[in-house]
Image 1 (cartoon, one colour):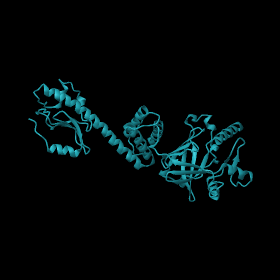
Image 2: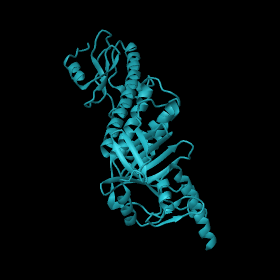
Image 3: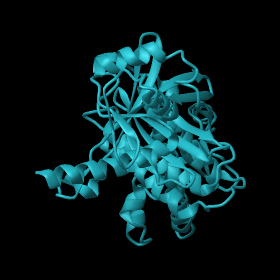
Length: 395
């Protein structure tokens, strides 16, 4: 048992030494429990400190957060994070996630997680995180003024071992002491759509998309199909968007819009609703484009038929699947899932007429229409009604 204890202490010391590089004090126990926690959506986002070369990504995870840290000359870190109130003061407490690769192995069992806590000052797009200063704590320790339970590790910094109520009392006593809470990390919110490289968009959108998996039904508002569509869009961005600086164009605009919507969806259910509305419009645009393509194919087949039948159109579109070898699937309207509305039976194609021959099934967004001169056009619902009222009879 003695060997196991010593091994645990050495592994803990290694972990604490790594975390103490940012100047925070560590604790075996949390500063607050679930009853003290609050959630602020304004905290969600990417926070950057250019001077320190640090970026912290905070993402919603139920009523708490997931934190990913990217700091200069340090390994990337992943933490669970909770925002809580101690008196009238907001604190963020973080706990490192145990790497999944460690599992329940003997090796993994020798790692002990530790908390750190940071006083929070949030002002719109500025975030200040101030930890309990480790140098102040060490000085108090040497002066024998540190009145809280702790353990000093032989190989590195000490760790607080006090209970949660004891920690809260200690923090309240020194929360306004500029030496106890003096050094801070100051961040500015990083705009999701400005001055981003392709690699940054890919990385951020993939990370947020992984987080949104927990918001798929029955746990959230996203359907399985909607999430699959988001994955498909993400795959397209990964394959087509360059990693470097971005220029202009529809592909870049869509990638930026995609990331902005994902970040909003991560913050709240309203953001999820905005994302699903965008998905629906995007899906319809794709279906309309496919409908437009199919109607053009049908238009060419009808022109070929009319040329060999004295200008007359067939009695039904099914005629085109025989001698003109038009695939049956080409006659299906992608907007409705049914057949196109064909009203050209017994009529002629006349190049100088703008009479409707075929159109998609209606919805409040509009229709794809083929005219008697063979042209194809997407029109709004209002434009379609106007066209119907001004039809010329083909003879």
